[in-house]
Image (tube, helix red, strand yellow):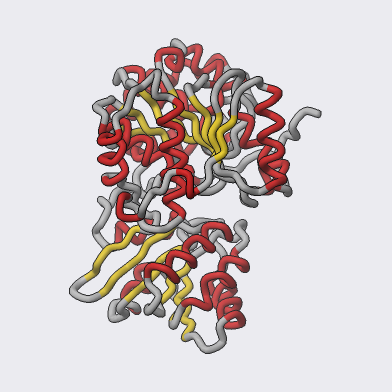
Length: 429
């Protein structure tokens, strides 16, 4: 097998969907020698801010000289972004080798119970991190937590960033139901850190913490007094993500001592592409890329624009998935723009850009609203605009980074982020 064949093999695994549950992952890991038992983890769940919090934790511990694994999703351009050691993506040869090594395990699964894409990738990551002798793994959930394949590990700490409405078709239609799924990563005696402030969601987390006989630390922005100047990431909301990371580091000081200097170095050097990423194009154009794919993310983007760019009326380049609350996203972001360009996302799940444009026109009648057939056409049509905000989907952000030459172009691997899941399994009781 060569790398393109490995990617095609992973594409084929998507046909098995996402069957939420841990039995397959435990079995697959056992057949691989249970690499999770040779590693230490910080397990991170939540609706928004998971990636930024993971990136901060990774950067802090790497600044302290640790060999740090990072498992994250979705990827922006290359599948290899999902599995990193000291921020170096897994190599193509290792992807091929690990899949070749795992293939014989598949015969142990009966028809109808074959491992899914995410189950296979989760165990691939565990094997790779164990081979690489990582001192610590920052371990991000894929979707939810309770039945997510990542939940086979016993971490040093559990982090739940926040609880908002998203993925309701899989996690449930209320904050309480979503909180129960996210809080499913909580283990007996393992400390929990959260910045959740929704009373309905927080009550669920507190109940599960009590049942698991562990302790909960609830973080608020003001507790750490972090200044934006100390962070490499844009946006006031990153102060809260940084506070979560710092609280986690503090709780684990006895197991993994970290100095104040190492913390400051880590926070000042966080790299997290596609999330409020500000770049320049040509001599005078600024582009802000942000994968705000739900209303809470759109609200955070809107607040950042108002605070950090108060004099700007940007061009909004927008592409969203149909299964997201795209109308609400349009209503939040459209009033901030002087010009709005809607585009399709390179996915069958893409919302119709004509429909996006219509909602934007109704929300902001005085804006110049344009529909383009592709992000490439939209970039051409906005080349003379001084400030462009590109948002709505991480797919769109990833494609734009490639088009701008800011990320290596490769084979079409973004489609690996797609899957067809099974309905939500209710929490027992």
